[in-house]
Image 1: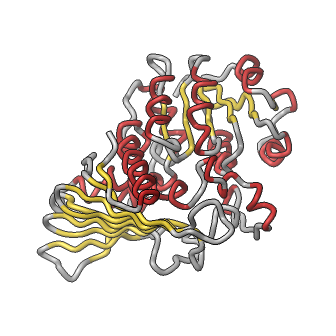
Image 2: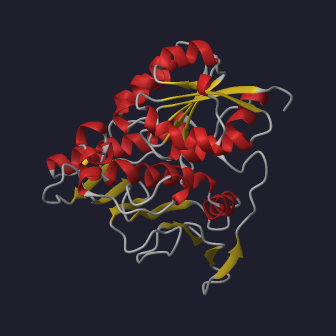
Length: 356
């Protein structure tokens, strides 16, 4: 790339902002022109890590946009504020990268798309899109190795959202931290279902070639003393059969250190075989009619500009190519449809049609 992109990171509700800023800081064609959060203390670690001068630290969104003059904005607000923040920055004519999930509702997701100015890209980052195992599984599916994909299982989760910070640094949350965190507030889009179901529904939709399901059935736990769920099981009915997504806060171990049981990841089956891809694994497992006993395939190595969301997004902006896969609003919207259906199903304790 010859263009130097000006990027601002706004709202640090989600600790993934630290990871995205590191990718920004390490990109040779990026100038980090500002970071912004209403709570200055949440920006101190990033300011120190990336040597950001004081005059690029903001607590007001409009001041940040007017003085930092970014071309691209990275947003990490609480799930229920994604629509609000996209609207606040989109009026400045910028491209926007939003950390998952897409939104807290389908209506909010659609409003985000509508708010974007003509010619500017809106991307939704799903970190599993950059897992070598998931990318390899998608290649195998697209090559026709397992035939036409018919369904998938996804198990996703970790010990809990407050047990780690940026860079997966481990910590033990206090009861006070849980009470204060948006992750544990239903009104803010908290809960394991909102935190992880979108991974399964969106990456699963990518594996299924953009297929749209018919019905959703969901059950969530109701932990005493908590406002949100920590465990959900969601069954999605397609014309081709059933798929399942399960979300869990409280796995025995975090999958990036030691895979828990059940393992976090995907199993996809098709008309001619199956493929499993577990989070952070170096191999995927494949079965075919010719080799029903199964065999391992080493995961593909990611290459620029497909190694992380920042370089991918900037490459698509620079080249004029459309977004594809889970980062595209089209695929993420189908994932959001399933999430919306699951929320309603769990609340009403019945199977529901997929929301339009």
